[in-house]
Image: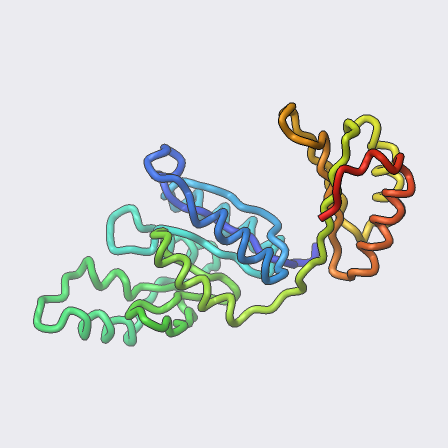
Length: 245
């Protein structure tokens, strides 16, 4: 299977136990969407080495880029670096440039063994300088190991995304006053005829809304979107369309 797009792994017991609400996953989804890099999966897992190894291995089989969030600090539950190294079949090494950065940041204060854990990385890792931060982005291959703290995650994500490119999609939203059952046959036909266009159908059950179903039509080529929209609208009564966005 061809490895395309990106996969995300959100790591943290705190997310799965509702101590912390995940902000990084939704933000990553939005930014990848804006850049035009398709996201093939988002998985949330525990701070557990075996779970991370399994998730990383599966993500790398299907996605070109893999983003992780969380578990790269100096405490006992920060096991992402070790797990990623295991998944890649590489040893964990201590990066001299990170040791120097940690010592410089400490100044005259003693450097503890725990703080030096921040210098550990899978063998072959590359550090991307992070403007405005002393701690760089840790990358290995096409994997990007980002922090779990949302503010830091967002800053480091932008450093990564500035080095990637995608193909933004064109999107048209159609709002209908018909139910999905009345739309299904036409949706099926157009989707079958145009597999290169993504067509989604999303019903609402709120009487206060002015529509019953939102249909999305998207593709990298604007002409393909316009063609699909035209085919859809031709199949429905003219007064069934509430609005188009």
